[in-house]
Length: 398
Image: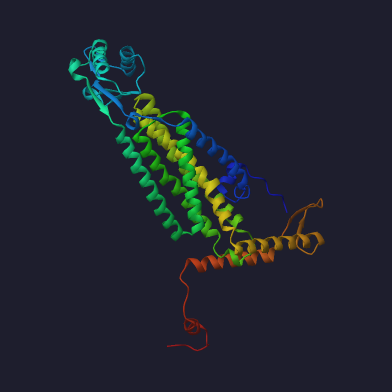
């Protein structure tokens, strides 16, 4: 028998033949993602977040972006602010287009004298349409951001409870717990990246954080659906363990997970490049960064965290431990037979044993797996009387 040519990594990805031992090496992934999680939590605890004025309170200045000499730039507004107050503003951005465009400057809380001096300096330096009267100011209360955070936490708790119940009913409790572990992992890492990068946390950041929960869960459900299909009737078989069947499911959906994530990431990258790089809109930056991080880490967790955790929880069941022992005993028996020449073994011309197989038992198990999968996928036929009526009697019925 000719030796099969080894496929490259892209061919194995598309074929999905279980070539990547992801579940078997889950301790390695636990260690890698555990270290990343530890760094993110450490940054959240010791470094904290760069909270915007919506959370800390502050002053917002707004003025027309059009002057008698043309359009007023963001950098010009920043320089004028520093000239008047002596420090950089928290954020400066252009909102709107055309004649309706405005420059918005956000800073820490300014007193009445500072606001008056700032307005005068902005008017002298930039000369916006409408003069100093067109420059408005408003105080932003920290309570608004606090209310958004409280509502977001309530929504997060309700989301976790609803998802837990749904997944436990649709799949099983071990998969529901594993999915929530993966989602919680995604939220913590995304928040940690925000803390490390130092981007300002705004209400848009909180909203973006909530939107990535759905994507992370969607990818996990797709993988779990394949795991359930591969492990149907597994306790009656001895061909592979639960972990091996789950690993096969991960490989079968691996290319799909990668493609889905790439398609989801492309518009977010466009949002970052156009919205932030060209338009300079800060809100888009906040939203795009949190979604980019969440999509990438959500796809990774559905592959390297959710399914391995589900396998570990499942293998706590004594029935699956016993099934794994039977699989190992069968393999040991085949190996022993191969060593003594009792089992079928393919030998190369040079005398090297390529693979020890028991074709008859393997084919029998494959037929049994297909029969059990078919029986579980279609309604069972009922009534022996139907079979009796169909039994040939040699007589012609009218």
